[in-house]
Amino acid sequence: METTPRQIIDEEVQWDKTKTIVSKTDLFGTILYANEVFTQACEYSAIELVGEPHNIIRHPDMPKVAFKALWDALKKGQNFHAIVKNLTRTGRYYWVITDFTIDKDENGEAIGYTGRRKAVPEGVIQKIEPLYKTLLDIEKLKGEKASELYFNAYLNEEVGKSYNEFVVDLFEEESKKEKYQKEKDTKPEEQKSNFKKGLHWFFFGDFE
Image (spheres, one colour):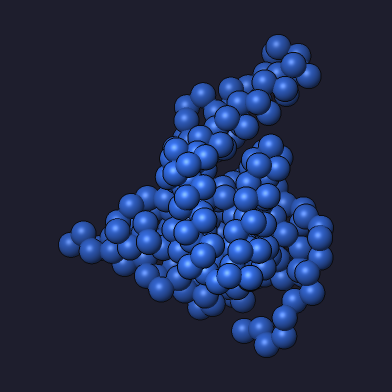
């Protein structure tokens, strides 16, 4: 759809962070459906998005190895979570945590993917952004394979978890910190426990 590169603006787009961004794609990542929250965040209309590759919103700050891990998992039939910085139509950005599920037909064959995305606490961004920058720098200087090798070594040696486990644990840890801080700053009757039901509920339930 676009023929000229977007100017990158170091500015976060404004969108309703209490809502869930939802999109559906075929097995090749072509967008089949985008909900209203998605269009608000990325600044494209649903008509503009349908039929386009999902990487239309890929931000240049994202290392390719993160998407390789995503697609490798989905092709194996595994659900997957990722923390992603996306690019809007005007060149702005927004950070999300994504939950991917595999859509299947009546015979159990995979026919596409559904992605649900929600905003992440600032603490998550502060911890994941330096890692992504390192991976991107390695990718630019030494190539994608070197970036992948470093990424796997980092997860094994410094984290001791898979990328999916690392993302989920980091998100839940920072969410609890954010929730605790909010509860300290609000009256008891206004306090809510949005994360007590776990990450699955976070994506599939609505905030009160």
